[in-house]
Image (cartoon, rainbow, N blue to C red):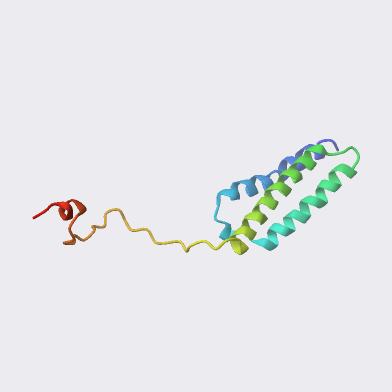
Length: 114
């Protein structure tokens, strides 16, 4: 029975590790429903981890880390959706594009008397 109190939480670490890896991704792809569901899931299992005998601190730590990561994801989504408006993403001009030459005088040419 003691092995289950070790390998179960170890397998669960995939959840917070994935959430932490997603912190670098665009907030546009965050699913708010799934994020809230994972928050409740982690809260439930944090409580379970301290209620079970013996207390499973490794499971608690796993779900605490997941709870923190999911709350950060939720904050990122809310800031993206309802925060200050951001300018639209612009298309980048390739660096190989040539800039057309114009016949406008430079400031040095304008300052020189003729």
